Length: 497
Image (tube, rainbow, N blue to C red; front, side):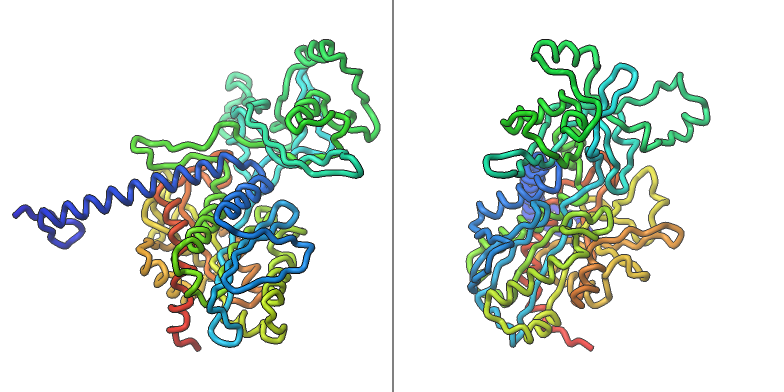
């Protein structure tokens, strides 16, 4: 018999063939999951579009939409979702066996909908050297040099004058209408070339068009001369930009009252690498976690018998403004999640004095992308904690509580992953390196619930375009489904201090 050694054990020829089939199946499923994520990412470009794409998935899976401003009447076995400000989304499934006074709790997966980007200023009308430019603000801690020389589109929402009042409309322009060109090497000193120091006020104002071409377009359209002062919309934004926006949302330029627009890489997300094993996409941090969590709860709810046997209220929630501290109307630091959880319990006729018991049995998986080891900068990682692509979900730990992971939450999480064959690895920053943070410590401290911080490894976090492994899209979905399926049994069987 032919014997082949694979990581230790000896296999016969027939068992080797079985292993090959399993591997091929995993590769196929990973590719399918990666393409689903790419389709999702290609519908986004702003927190509002992220929530819109999530809502689309949830409706397709039979989730009932609740209104944040209406009373909720819920039932066991129900699947629901709610949004806030168009930038937050929460989906939840009430297990048929939920019992607030017994062993039930909230099993939650949390993420965020925003990413570092350039956002339109209230007065964006800028011109220089015969070029019409768009004034932008930096949002979050971006790697701003990566935005140079990229064709840029934008996405966001526009407030328009409507019959009887005002209305918010989503807008997404994938056409490459702006660019931020680099300065030629010949016009830089040796020190400037070496440093490549970006002045975020003067160096990253995108170019929309030339004044020459815009003047010709204005003549053809019979456009009136734009006002230079005042608070009129044409005094704040270039008419060319307003005309394009109006065409996209089917209104008149003068009906546009305001806008929140996020610039984005106009190139669609795609698979890269010789074996198409990597995903190249804008906003992987943190679209991948949000999509994986939403897809995971959809798969869980669609699995026969899963909801009928579930004891917990299974929750996925994703917030805006994580990249800027979470202190906002739609940020995790606000009262949105505590209020929503109270409303869920009230909708199930659970007395308010029982809520602390439910919280004591609850658990949050805070999912936010992790730093995969970079082959060109491997020394930047702590030697024993170097997350690799294709090797699974990363548990993030920090003794200074930048992450909310504890030994118990890590052990519970590993067991969940073990039951679903989801690989796990560890991450700790070097002692001489700063450490980021997530919504994990925020929600854990606000609600007093056990929490773990995890994420998929990626390269170039906060770049205009980031990279992750195609297999990790599948790992994120499998994690979500496994967490909602197995956590309660594992937790109930654990003796705690």
